[in-house]
Length: 188
Image (cartoon, rainbow, N blue to C red; front, side, top):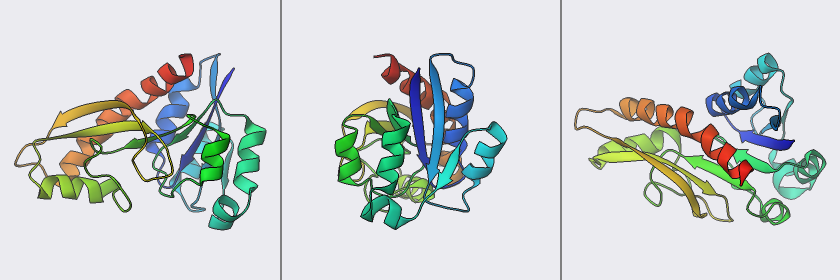
C-alpha cells in the first residue's frame, strides 16, 4: 500500500480531488491531511471524506520535531503540497528526500517565489499580458518554487481574460493533471 500525506493551507479543492481520485484504489491511500490553518476549509472536506486531518502551528512545524515525528509515524511514500503556503523546513526535506512535491499555478520559473501564490500569480500573469500560463508540479527544495520540475501543462491567456478567468483555467488543469502525476510518481 502506497501512502500519501497532503499539506494544505486553504479551501482544499486539490486535496479533495486527490482524496477522491485515490479513494477506491487498493494500492494507494491518502492517509492524512495536515494544515497550518485551524480554520481551513480543507478540514471540513476531510471530515466529509473520512480522512484524518490535523492542524499545527509554526512552532510545531519549524521549531520542533512535532510535524516531522507525525510524518515519520505516517511513513508516507509521497508528501504532496496542495496549496500549502509555508516554506518547508530542511530537516523534513532531508528526512524525505525526493518525496515532497508541490503544485504551482504558473509555468515556473516564471511567477514563482515568496508571495507568489493564488490570485497574486494570476493577477501578475494578466498584468504582464502573458499569452500562456499553466501549472508546474515540482519537487520541493529549501527555496520557494525552485525544485526540479516534474510536469507542466499550459493554457492560453487571451487579452480579454481577467485574473479570475485565468484562475478558472488553472483550476481545470490542476484537477485534470495533479492526481495523474502523483499516481505516476508512486508507480515509478
